[in-house]
Image 1 (cartoon, rainbow, N blue to C red):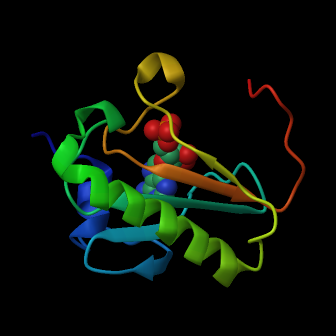
Image 2 (cartoon, helix red, strand yellow; image 1 turned 180 degrees about the vertical axis):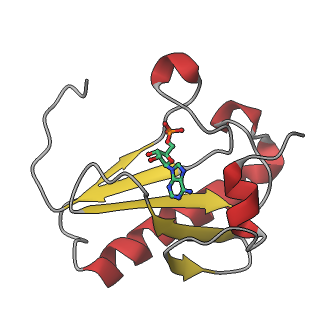
Image 3 (cartoon, rainbow, N blue to C red; image 1 turned 90 degrees about the horizontal axis):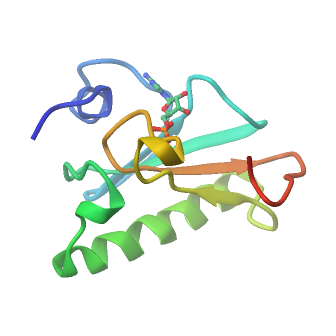
Length: 113
Ligand code: AMP
């Protein structure tokens, strides 16, 4: 599978503003924040898109959601945040290493753009 810039962040080959890390995932601030709090939560496992996940990844996907909640709590935004996952280029995905965007600290419109 091809490496992305997120693989380099996981391997500490390039720096990132890491706010949370455990055995399975890493969370770091987005370099181009779209809200006062904008953090990316990524699995350490190489998984280009959510639809590359299989049954064996069920636990990992739940782990990422709980990590998002944990990070939101640490950032003091657990009461109101938006969790976004872009799956595929047409949905806005630019980096093909699956990730959640945790956004908070402002109000958000619905439907999203
Ligand atoms: P997506 O469009 O869903 O693939 O989101 C990719 C996100 O990664 C964008 O919000 C970028 O601003 C962010 N990004 C790209 N490179 C870096 C980096 N080196 N460190 C932190 N965030 C990054």
